[in-house]
Image 1: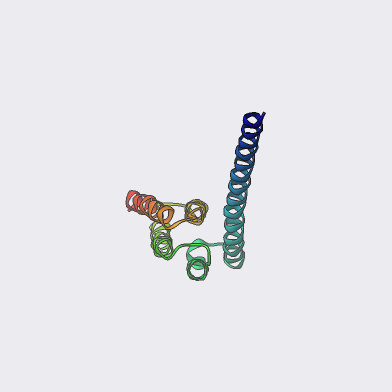
Image 2 (image 1 turned 90 degrees about the horizontal axis):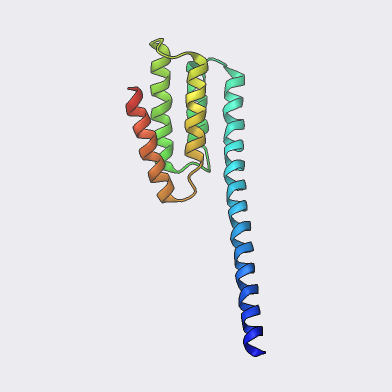
Amino acid sequence: MDKFINKFEIVKIIKNFIVFIFFFSLISCTTNSYNYSKELSKIEECKNIEPFFSKSRTCLKQSIISSDVIYPKLVSDMENLTDLIDNRLNENKISNDMAWKLFLENLEIAVGASTLSDAEDISLKLNSFIESIT
């Protein structure tokens, strides 16, 4: 009988552990979604003030620099990307809508970093993208 109780307790502990992991994962996903929404609202404010990407560049950079959810390494990458997108737009190689789309897609990637290791991996992705459009 004691062995049965011990097995039952072990199963109960395993179930509790699985539930804990599930909730932790759920909270982690919610946090990333919240962080992106928070950053997106700042960017939308810049876009509402000045819909042309080139004229919003300063506002965008200030929003990125003041961000409390983007790792410092990714801040410099996003600043470089903002300048590059602006250059491509001024050279008539991309449209204004495409400039905003590229910026927002990469912002979503940058905000997704939850650890320093993630930030380093994302930095490599951003730099690879930057090289591909130069």
